[in-house]
Amino acid sequence: MNPAQVSSEKIKRIIIRTGAAILVASVTIYLALPVAALFFRTTPDLFFTTLSTSEVISALFLSLSTSAVSLGVVIVVGTPFAYVHSRNEYPGKTIIDTLIDLPLVLPPAVAGLALLVLWGRAGLLGQYLSLSGISIAFTTLAVIMAQIFVASPFYLRQAKSLFEQLDPAYEQTARTLGASPLRTFALITLPLTANGLISGAVMTFGRALGEFGATIMFAGNLPGVTQTMPLAVYVGLEGNLATGLTISILLVIISFAIMIAVRLLARGGAFHV
Amino acid sequence: MKKIHRAQTAIILTGIVCGLLVFTAIFVGCASSTPAQPATPAAPTARPVATTAAPASPPAAVATASTPAPVYTYSEGNVVAYTAASLKGVSPKLAEGFGKMYPGHKVVFNLDGTQALKTQVQNGAYADVFISASNSYTAELTKGGYFVDGNVKPLTSNYVIVILPAKNPGHIQSLADLAKPGIKIAMEDKTVPAGTATIACLASLAKSTYSKDWNTSVFSNVITYEMSEPGVATKVSLGEVDAGFVYESTYTAAPKDTYLAITIPKKDNYLQTYTIGVMKQSTSRGAATDFENFMLSAQGQQILKDYGFRPISSS
Image (spheres, rainbow over the protein chains, first blue to last red):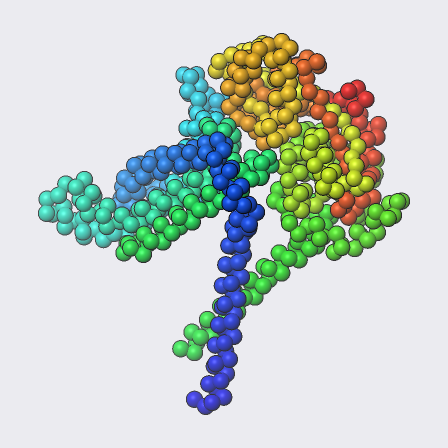
């Protein structure tokens, strides 16, 4: 290599480095600055004063409890479903795969309307339920149903691919050694996929916590009953901005914690996807 | 090795170019956002830089505050009207009437709860005209210096009414029935002007005719506080609630047999006053003033009257 070549290589490298730095900086600033702006708009004093108002506390409690219930349902039903689904071939499997993923790309407002015209009092199924005195729309149950609808794909996708990638040899060995299918699942399959499953669960919880569009359409907006944190932010923007800011900051902190949790789990788990 | 390097360079350069393009597009998009595009008012998100838009668009220079007689060309006759959601039903007729009175002019409505529109404008959204259904929000905007000459004109008014689904699933015959246990009611959030009006009506009814307990029971029957007046109407028309509080105009504008209605006596009712004002930031002030004139004209007022609004003089 002659010296001219070396220096041109060097210049090239500098250009690439600078370009990469600009790219990284601009993307980071674009994504992080709006979040940071939330913190600049309020003061610690104002934050803690509004934090203790009943509006904020009830929204926080409602959001956390409904998201927890949603997550519980998704795990209890979703884990065996994903296992059965990924370990068996059956007609229409691709269609089911697509349908499961649909809520990921479906606008939440569409999901809300869909839930309303199915379960609402005048809805496809709801009209029969309402005859027997059961109403779902505009209740806390509707909040949970909306959350499950939009958030479950995060867990299901993760669980499906974990089970698909798990080498069946481990399970077969356990089975040949005389373990029952349930025992094999509990002692071999679950521990080997646990990290990935938990990170899927954390994402599901986060999505449920942030659910807005489907909730406001299907569950309405009633403080303490259906007004979750994102709804309270929406109402706050048009009424009391301080409330909106406080809840937004709470959500930022919770989301951040969620992402860190997922990160840590991903690092620890060999089977993470 | 060299090949990989070249590929990397290409990818990174493409990335940089794309990034710059996106940023330029965003900034240019913000700076040159003129009211000419009908698509802009539909976007509910506020554009924070829009206030700086005025100097960027050439027609702005023509119609300034120092020019009393509006000088403008009809090609810039597009009016973006931020309009209280309760005018939703009448808005197509108003657009039609405006086009007839001022051929070549066009109005695009951004319909939402006044509280939402107010917030959008305060955060930099572009509007030529602002039709408010709330005196307090109007006052807030006036104070903020958003209107030409710092003032607005009374436009029309509206009473509150109770609507029920045509099938009347709650078997509601009177205002007293609204307090029956198990009745499902939709009303507007207190930040929505119609919500404020409803709360005032209920308080007055409780005082004059019913009781405090009645008032409490009615509120405990509320299953959703909607963020706009049409939101309540929709819940009633879908049959998802037994009753909803809306404006008279919404009941009048709806196709026959959509709703049943129970009126609230005038003495206990709350007459909501609507105002109209031309925004200072408007870059087509001529057309905006024309729109305001149309709305206050006999034709405009007649259309509003046909849809159940009450002329200002009757209040």
